[in-house]
Length: 205
Ligand code: SAH
Image 1 (tube, rainbow, N blue to C red):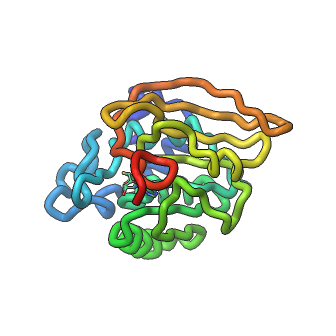
Image 2: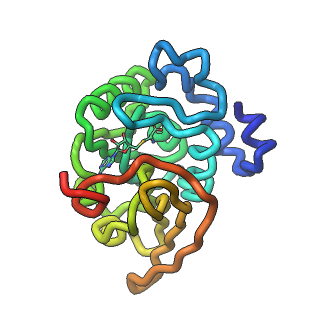
């Protein structure tokens, strides 16, 4: 899979290595395991999906986490993206609004021995005081705009990566927080994520 991603333009070797290390089949439903290494999003539960490997790779590359970083992730889902981040950062805090998914993901991550991850079930659009401010924040659900609590909980010099747009399609947007608290942003590839719910998402939950 890593070789295919490299051919598709993913350049960051650390990201390719992390993806080669994490067994994606452990994060998909048993009846879909034969498709675990195809470059497709796959259903999790209800309308939620595990992201396409290319999208995971691209978002991780744009986030550019480093070994010293504390990372906040919103939208744990299967925990696959969380596992990739756990290999690249010092510590990962991940929020999932659906408690069943959060529980299953936490169990999978612990099963892989990834003990630098903390998963919790609540509305991540509100951020998480636990370890703020974060060096990197990644949102893996489509948002109408960058939630204010997440902007606030980012360190100066940090990056926030999220899919921004409507509920059908989004563009990946990379925000950099400047000294003094301002932001600069860059718009990247088109993606299709399930909607970010919650206070600063598409609806109240
Ligand atoms: N990164 C995941 C894919 C996640 S799909 C993976 O690799 O498997 C998006 C996830 O975001 C869904 O599981 C959905 O339940 C969750 N989500 C949506 N709104 C949320 C919110 N406000 N806070 C936390 N999680 C949210």
